[in-house]
Amino acid sequence: MTKTAIITGAGRGIGEGIAYRLAENDYAIAVADINFVSAKKVAENLKQQGALAKAYQLDVANRNEVFDLVSEVIKEFGELAIFVNNAGVAFIDSFVDSNPSDVERLLDVNLKGTYWGIQAAAKQFQKQGRGGRIINAASLAGVEASALQSAYSASKFAIRGLTQAAAKELAKYKITVNAYDPGVVRTPLRDAIDQKTAAIKGLSVEKQKESVLKEIALGREATPKDVAEVVSWLSSPSANYITGQSILVDGGMRYQ
Figure 1 (cartoon, rainbow, N blue to C red):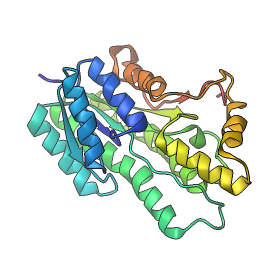
Figure 2 (tube, helix red, strand yellow):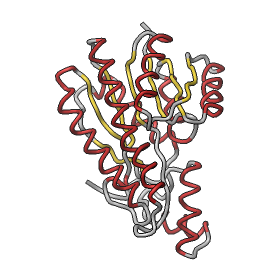
Figure 3 (spheres, rainbow, N blue to C red):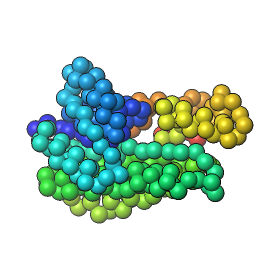
Figure 4 (cartoon, helix red, strand yellow):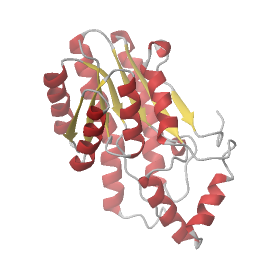
C-alpha cells in the first residue's frame, strides 16, 4: 500500500521543502496549494526525482474543498498516512489599523483551514483504522506574540490549542497531532513581512533583517529544509510516542 502525505501550501516556501523531504522518505506526495501553477511545478519536480506526486488546487478556507481533496487523494493513491496543515497567510499592520477583510481572510486560512484539515484527516484515519499523523504549522509568533502581527499571532496561538485538543481526542484512534513553530525562515512570505515591517519602522530592508538576525542564537535564519527535518521526524516511527506538542524551530530565539 502506497504511503501518502498531503501537504497544504506546498507550492512554495516551507511547504515545498516539506514535500521534497517527505518524498525522500518514500511517501507519495499530494502537493496542494491555492496556486495550481506553483503546485504543479513542485509535483513535476518531484516526479522527475522519481517520487510519486500529484498537484491539487485547494483553498483551505473552504471546508468542502479540504474534504474533497482527501477523497481525491485516496482515489489516486489508496491510503493516507500524513496530513500536514502548512498553508497560511500573514499581513503586517498595527493592531488598531488592521483591515477587517485582511483579518477575516487570515483567520479563515490559518485557523479555520487548519481546523478543517484536522477534521478531514482524522475522519479518513478513523475510516482506515490504522492511525495516522497530523502535523500543523504553528509559529514562534504563537509562543510569543509579534508586534504588527496581531491576527497572525492570534491564529498561531489558536493552532497550538487545536493541536492539543485534537491530540487528546484522537489518541484513542492512534492518531498523533503535533505542530512545528518556525522562527525566521527565508521564504517569499518572509520577504514580504520584512519589506512591510521595514516601511512601518522607517528602516531599510537590510537593517530590518539585521535587527532580527541579532535575536537568533545560532546566528542565521532557518531554511525550509530546517523545518522539513522536524516534520520528517514527527512523521517517523521515532515519534510514535509524541503527541500534542509544538516544537520550536527558531535557532534559539525563544526558550520553553
